[in-house]
Each structure stands twice: as structure tokens, then as C-alpha cells.
Length: 156
Image (cartoon, rainbow, N blue to C red; front, side, top):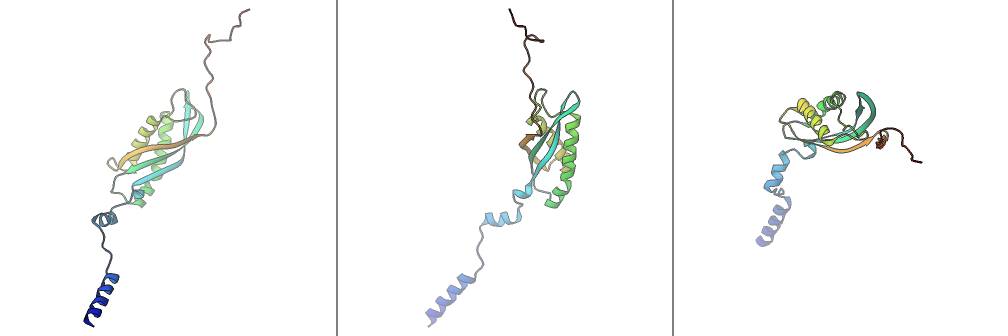
């Protein structure tokens, strides 16, 4: 009977014992997840300027990767300031190239977004920024330049 009782106690101990976690799982339990360390911006309408006038809008989706140190409520509270700063920066300095009226220049955009994110969140809190998608409000094509500069001359 003692063997049966010992076997029963061993089975109960194994069944009721708390699960053993590996060191990585314990570390991940206290560390913030990847979703907590990013901020996704979507639906931000940026102006496309030509000669100081707005001729189009481009709606963008962007992602800001953050370093640990901020909580999710703190990040969400500062998001409107990033959006406003980005739109103001796009009006001050055009984010499009001189001949492109349906898209922003990715390098100019990422530089402006990095500056605004670091201003709102802190200089050492922002790891990287990424332009994920952009859609123009309307299609605008630049007509091809004519070689003669004026009307085409048709020889007789």
C-alpha cells in the first residue's frame, strides 16, 4: 500500500505543481511587448505644395518604433502633438519633390516625422520611423515638356 500511496502522491504533486517557466518567458513577462513599443499613425493628410499653394493632399500611414521607458497611456496622450507638428512641418517645408504631386518624398517625410516624434516623446525615446503607405486625394500628372518650348511646328 505504501507504494500505491507514494505513486498517488507523486501523480498529484506533478498535476498540481505550478508550471515551470524558462528564463526567457520570465524575462518577457516583465518586458514591454513590441505592440507597446510602437505608435501607428494613419489618416494624416499632408499638403502637397506647388509655388506656395496647396494643390493636393496625400494621406499617409506611418509607424514610429520606440525605446522602452514610456507607458501606453503616455504615448497615446502625445500622439495628437506628433500629428499636428507633422502637418505644420509639411506646410512650412514641402515634403514632396518638385515634380511629384501625388506622393511625399520618403526621406523628407521620415526626417520631419523623426524630428516631431523626438520633440513630443523625447530625444532618446524614438528608435526609428517608417513610411508605410501613402495615397493621394486626387491624381495630378505633370504634362511632358515640349522640346520647342512653344507650340509644335508641323513642317510642310
